[in-house]
Image 1 (tube, rainbow, N blue to C red):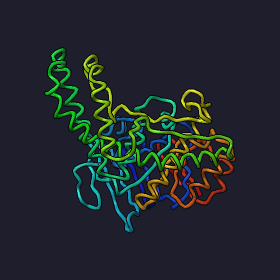
Image 2: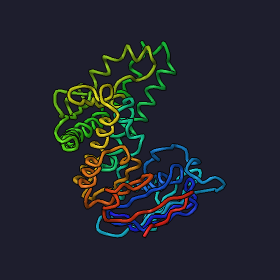
Image 3: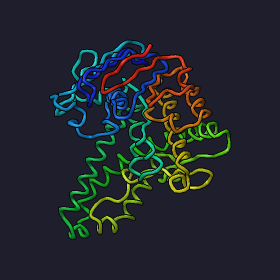
Image 4: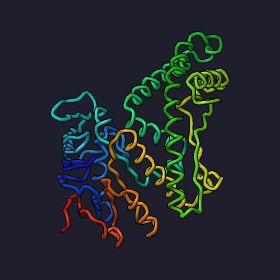
Length: 365
């Protein structure tokens, strides 16, 4: 897919920003705090997901304005489409002239992959960052995954609320929990099955990309820490049930559900050692980049649409060899790269360059 035109109005510090991007390389440069990331963020919003920087709508609206608006014209699924998102107390989406119930309607229509400084959290931070990586990628490729996950979270909240309500009486009231446990096992089986299948392919792709990126000197692997006897749904359900029974005493003490897809993790290793602990800053950045590049390839393979690739403040910390590898890997995809000053390598690439100054975006010729 390709963005043909993109506009944002009163989005963060961008009073009015309009670009007609190149079909491949787009460099967005300027000094820090001028609005480069805001432009990238406004593109990401069209996926239908939350911002990768903020959860509250008020943070997305320019100071002094009542609302923000984003408009994108893009080519996807063999035709031109137009999406308009209005942001005030809530987000309202119109897709091809039809008002949708939720911005989530963009899933399956607009595909993007984003790498920002916060993306390093998938390697450096806790399990929630890695689960979020899986959930966003799977929701982009399998829109029903987001619905299953939403239902799972509701059932999880019901079980946790029951613990809080009954307190110490929970020990002798297991039968009250059984309906929610069965729902968690039913939905959890679907979630785990999706994740296991996806991780198998993602790991193979990311490992190869990292190996090429490091010229074969380093090996990067990862695995899901929930490992049933096999990936068959019956085996997954059985292990989920066993884990829930095994964690009952722990759940009673803590008064919440301690095991399940909401608590699982990805274990990442670099040359056999845990990347989170033993990887250098540069190695951790390369691990995260390899995963994101693999994610882009997976989306293209599954959805039949190459996602827009958004790289925020990535190239400045990479040597020329790794920059060249990434740019070659992303050839024929539409890419947006932010930087403080375009490197010699970036300037050689075909495409467009946009300068951002104090919230104003100007195409350089």
